[in-house]
Image 1 (cartoon, rainbow, N blue to C red):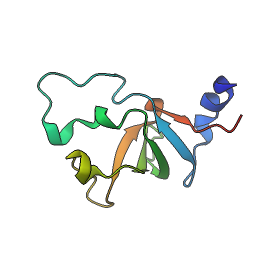
Image 2: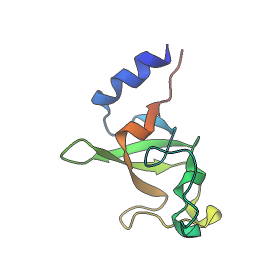
Image 3: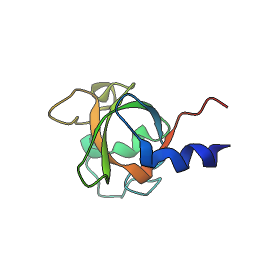
Length: 95
């Protein structure tokens, strides 16, 4: 049933609950990543969509986890938020 949820990403709208499954297409941070930019720590975290880019490539997510607790930088417009590739998320399904 998860394939149904993933195929619905084209209909991703503000307020939808998602799960970060990868970051920038990968599961592991590069060796040279700065600790405050190690967003791979968020993989597996739940978030809520806030808005999408006009080209529908990225979505602004508000994460349940505290960025400050993880030592991460947040998007300037919203605490605990980050622009993520749509291909890096999947819906939180209720099946």
